[in-house]
Image (cartoon, rainbow, N blue to C red; front, side):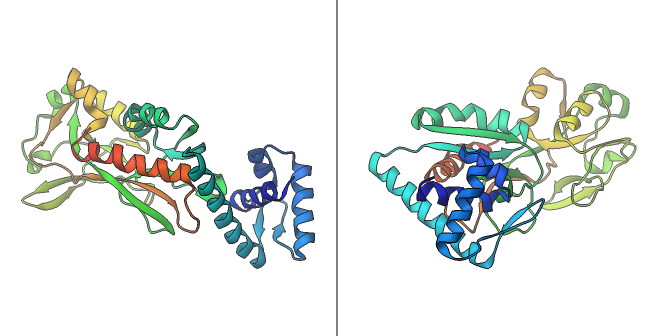
Length: 299
């Protein structure tokens, strides 16, 4: 391996925490990767990586070298981009599946047409992944976010609504205000942070009111929650875009429209400890410019 390839391999090993994963990412065998890092450490006269049976992490010297390598490689990529104006390579993004299908994909052809050498890997998930260790460039997340060391860039807000099926409303009545919810039930969406179902939320006279209702069905996935609502199992709240087809067909009906839940923010997150590569910067800017404006108006 030449010197630049070795630097890229070293950065990938630190990012992934694994020789095998980094070797696969760089298109070399594990023995070639091991020999290249051993030769690099011998040339520098210092140990860069601490190896264990399950994980690889940098030494103090390795952390400093990693920061310099990331900056050098980013500068090189920027120089290449400036020379030919091209944005190339693979952007790995993790996003909840429904957002990927209904928000990102419809706008994606324009981005790919503008940058023919750009490729996008859409990983579907709702947990807050370890971007660096799992080799992900950025994640798109809905809702309030826990404090982290990542950069958070707000894309927009998604208007939320309360819905139920016609069969549920026929059995329980159609509430006119939150005060009419006695005797109703919700589909309990279980919080990943607390392990408890989230209460329904309404805005009345500028104030947010939380209403916990009985829930015979508890779910932890947004698609499952919507499916349960279609079956008449309770009231549910989610961004309006998720129910566009159901509302149009009459499968679900909006209720308490005068008392909407607070809008849900949508954000993109990426590591704060490294400079964005041109391909990731272009992708993040595209998210903010293309996805963001549509969200505020309600997709």
